[in-house]
Length: 273
Image (tube, rainbow, N blue to C red; front, side, top):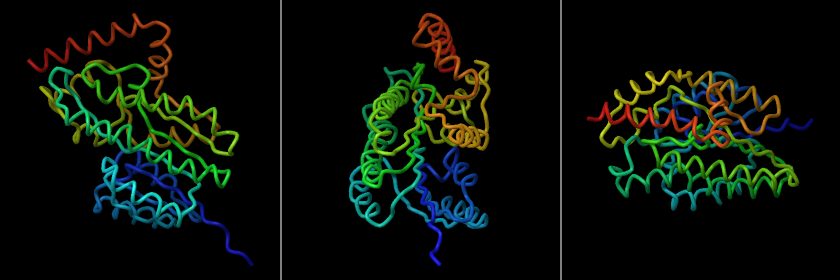
């Protein structure tokens, strides 16, 4: 009697936030989760949780901004493992006006938030095309639709992911590959603690978000919303409700979105003074 096939699932940014909660909610018997992030201790702790739910867990300690290392890792890994589902959720953020941002900030955000996604999509998509099956989920941000003054590098890279998705989605179906884009609004994760700050700080950033009235959701809620939308067959996933509204309003009524953005810049400067 043949052994049932194990579903192979890879998650980047798995040490915390949405990536970690996706792993927790996806874990089940018959699945092997490949957990990718920089923090080995956090990944090992998560792997224990995943195994407790009957899944197999493997830890891959990688810094996705290290493009050169991934270029060596990916071909060897993909020769050994045929992936069924991939969730790309690694990210780093930045808060500050462009006039204060340093060249190395742009480089870090670019490598982590856009170039690494392109690199991993290119490699994994090619494998999925060859096997004529697979699901590729790109976790982006509302900032890709609406922009984000005082976080311009971050918004720029997320807009790049929107472009990646909105073109790849027309190529992929003919090869049996399902491509999805996830663009949440504010989610309570460690991205704010680990962000780059220029003439700002963690406390002021969270204060400004709270004052804007856009409530933060927990990462577990975000992961649940993603998996529910995927199960319903949705390709372009935006949540919560205010994020869907802003993503719709932005390209149609830029003046309305401009009012929100002007408030953001004004308050940022007040808090940074």
